[in-house]
Amino acid sequence: MPKEVLKHRVVFTSTLYETLHPVVRVHPESGERGLFIGWFVRYLRGLSQNESDEIVKFLQAYITRPENTVRWRWKVGDGLVLL
Image 1 (cartoon, rainbow, N blue to C red):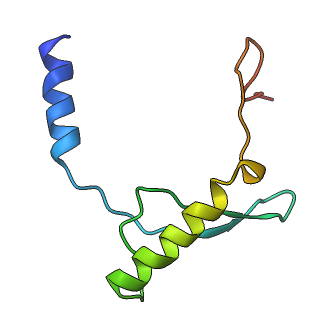
Image 2 (image 1 turned 90 degrees about the vertical axis):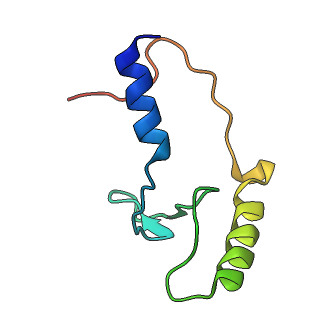
């Protein structure tokens, strides 16, 4: 691996990135609500760490149920269509 890539990787993985985003997002076309959450979540703003941990654990258990997930085997032609 080139030195530049290794150097970038060290900086990237040692940097703490924080951002706020909504837990529930609304699809701009369908209006359907979806959970936007994952194991990267550190806490929910306005709640204690314990409360956040419990809610995130609950939501994560819900969204990872087989009936709430999809498995996709990518093939040529799948993906973003540019107009």
